Amino acid sequence: MVKEGVLLGFSGGMDSSTAAERLLSEGYRVIALTIDTFGDGGMLRYAREAAERIGIEWRSYDAQKEFRREVIDYFTSEYLAGRTPAPCTRCNTHIKWRILAQLSDELNIEHIATGHYFNIERRGDYLYVAKGADLAKDQSYYLWGLSQATLRRALTPMGSVVKEQIRERFDNRSESMGICFLKGQPYGDFLRSEGSSIVSGEVRNRQGEIVGKHDGIALYTIGQRRGRGIPEGMRVVDINTDSNTLIVGSNSELYKSTLYIDHCTIVNTEELLNADDITVKIRGIGRNPETYVRVSPHLTGYKVFVDGGAWAPAKGQPLVFYRNNLVIGGGIVVGFE
Image (cartoon, rainbow, N blue to C red):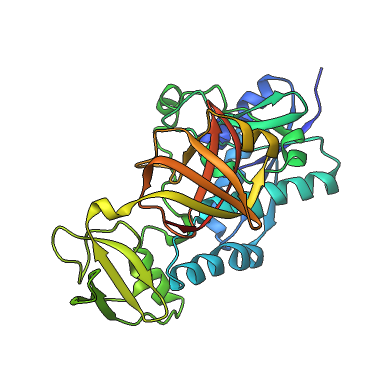
């Protein structure tokens, strides 16, 4: 007996192809949707042929204008403002999952899914994004912005999959890594190709002394220790966009005990403010705080106290709250001290 339909975000790669096969094996009617963000005819043919091999219906959606507005323009403006953007998080919330939900409504399809490695768990009246079984590939950090309405109709075919167990079946398929629209080029080159004005300026230490010259603040981020103008043994500890100046200092200056976030999506506010076992991630890969945090309301967002400090938080980065394997919310870092 065929179950309900599923609109599956589909690139034709190993993850989305495996997701399609798993959904089929569970009896779902799978409709593959390739979201075209670049006008890439080769990518569309690749996805269509993969769908044909699996034996599922295939559709495409032209999201070039939306992707430009919501992701690329955001990416460039954030870097030019001295912040560190998270384009993958924004794309998931504002492009991929939103389009899947919108089109599934138009096509009268019950469920939506992607090839992301994560799970969904219910606790009482709430649904939570949860870590996938493959912790090395877990993508829960990038999905903190999904709404309850989205989670109610979402399926997680890759939640129990360990990637190494499927990789050997896809020897000839490349794995997408990094920021897709950069296509392997340094982000500074991309910013220049977009016509961004990148102006060199001074590098100063905490005493205000000029210690070097930078190539443009958009090419640096908090914690960086390599690059023109950064003295040996020092790191970028602050970015002053008003004066187009980089401030450098010691690694110890990068630890911040108080972070401020805004533009939040929180599952249960009472839980966030009262639980005593909350941890945070401020980057998908890399150094994250290992201690519990305390949270209190602050203006339109929250104030997060991190015992021992968080290393090198940057304005623009997502901060994601966890309780064990559950994502209980997240927001964008807007300040720290």
